[in-house]
Length: 438
Image 1 (cartoon, rainbow, N blue to C red):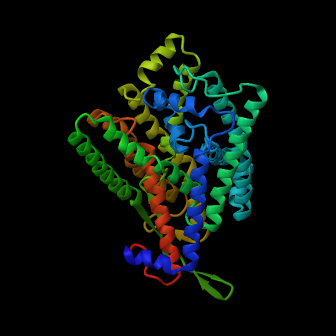
Image 2 (cartoon, rainbow, N blue to C red):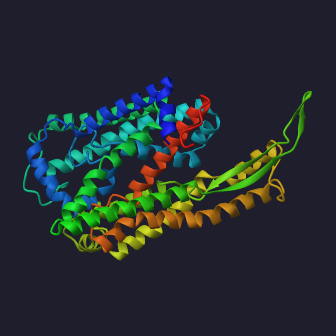
């Protein structure tokens, strides 16, 4: 490992890319702490402390997670990368049902650039909508319910528009910085920014566990170390599952093209155990956020009372059962729309490829579908169990909201970390070094 770091430092090009990425991350974190105009920071801090100790922290946990805490601070980057993530997911789903987008996807780099442009436009539209909703809730006091302080100085129309435009501009800057990292830095830009926002909350969350059990100093430190040990074990399990894949062998027959012979090679189709990544967890969390939002907007009815009893805190068995089932269902749904066995089978047949022992065409498509369904079952169960780690932590150590090594956060951190290390490894191998992990 030490030799790998030394190899990185010896490569001037790679060193510049890493330093450029770190510089962008510093600016990104600075914008996450810089408040938007017209915000009363004293009252905001008082309301935020009350919210983090109550139900509101759980209500906005997903959005606040991807903003690195910037949402509850009403900073310039309060919306974070959520509008971009939502726009990317929408465009990815629409590619399946909109023929025009499907055609662009098949056109290669030019089509991908066009889809990226649509994603940018949709991101800004969603940023305006999210910013409007967020500022409106801040003005009306619905973000921090029960807080008696006004967190907005001027509630006039012009001041509200300035706040919305500032947050929208912040989203545009975040999107631009992510593309800069992708083009001139190391790793996938938006994934690196997401990793930074989540990892930035780890020290605070870990220390919050220690503070929550400070009645007994020995017990607090012991629990602090136990949580770190559990986190390392969870990371080890996630790495094992994320690296797991089923390699389906593919043989290409020899064929003559002009006077040259092509083909005759062997390769494989890598099917990951977790083919859908973290998207099903985000989908399920977004769906379960809707009942909580309904209860917040219309609190005085029987439905809202029932939702408040079973869905707001997130520690009831009904909530966790629904969450578990939704993750599994979205896993199968997302894999079904992103992996097309028929298309892969047709491409293999077109270029003379076949799976040994399986006839080309429809039998190959059925075989791929069969293998994929068997892989999706353990993959979906793995995602659902990882997502329920915060609840298990609450039962075992009473640290639900402060527990950092669980759910979506740890999946993203480990996944982005693995992807970034692989990119550094490939960069080093291109420069004739041993690599980063050798």
